[in-house]
Length: 483
Ligand SMILES: [Fe+2]
Image 1 (cartoon, protein in one colour):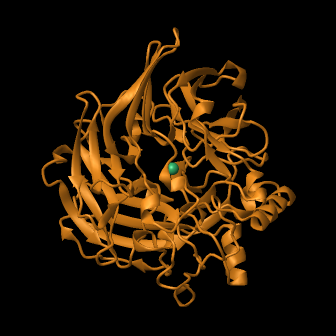
Image 2: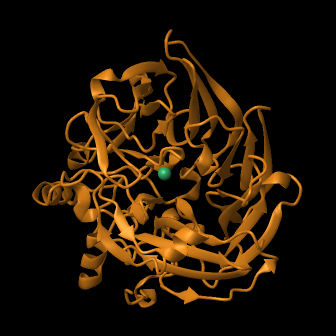
Image 3: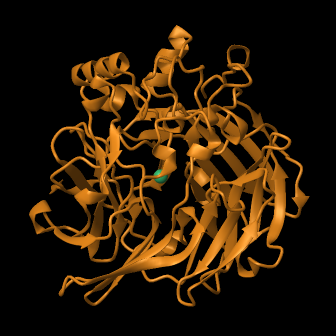
């Protein structure tokens, strides 16, 4: 097991940056605690481990800092037989190790690169074979072929040991071919295949690949896009894989002359691409849609020649991609749930908002990815609306909200089905909540069947603050203890 680290002496408590203060301020210590106190009662049928990834700079940044720049830190809450424990660990990336040796943060900023920093980044990237040398592995996690991986969207996955959240090392789903792997691969719950894509700053295309349930690369092809766009997520159905060409343009050379690497250009149009699962790139069909932007997909499915897709859509450029990071008001996550229905034969697209209230970090029951579903879940935070976890009924076109105090941020809610699940919403929604009023965090467990009626079953106050982060995974008891 890796020796735990503490950087408490080197990190100022208040930084003039919205991504380094309040609920987003980093935690310095790696700790492990068992037999945590519980408010309420942990369900006896909830056994497993929640692990969540998120950016957490180990050392104060030298210059600009954006939320996406921090070192990956994993927080784990294990629940077993009515008892709870917690631990956290940085992902030991090459970048993390280098910083630990030098005792300083020398990472460039993803969104705010200064010209000289950016030139150095490009030069190092060219010399060392891509962006992996500053891969933070800070975005999400996936469990597949008996392994847990911490993911970034511009580098290799890092394998993680579930029992102690220690880092095994980098892996590469594309095999010997060095290539980025998305932070949002999709696992077909029926076939066990893992589908993924990889962004590249070279060439106007993305790579797409499939692992079989044993982790063998069984398909790969190049998807021609014709421009470099920020493509953070994608979608699958039983027969198709869906790509998003939305006009958040990536301009790798612009920071060299002081310009922004990301630029939203609505007039350049938006397209959704549909590819047969094992198709080659030239079989992709594009469908024009209203411009906008999306980070995250809720789910998609097909019914004969009709494809239905739900995602959290921003009507324009998301505030969180602003270059300025001094004010919380600029970090808006004001996307809302949106639906596209695409007639694959005729090319007709019907699209529109499901509701107009903010929602991000959407999740469905993992067992229904790519298949018709009735319920979806999302979080509302970093918006002007009340912080909440939201349950959508996609058939009734309604939503229920469990609201938190204005000082609380509830992150991504993960649906955990109860054993012998009797209905689609028969399960728990688990999430980490940080309260900026007292700088404390707690893990919450909600009953999804009574979402609008005091759904919180239990709360587990955390032994240290857990900053608001990105995406996590629920490992059932067998996965998390046998690995
Ligand atoms: Fe994401």
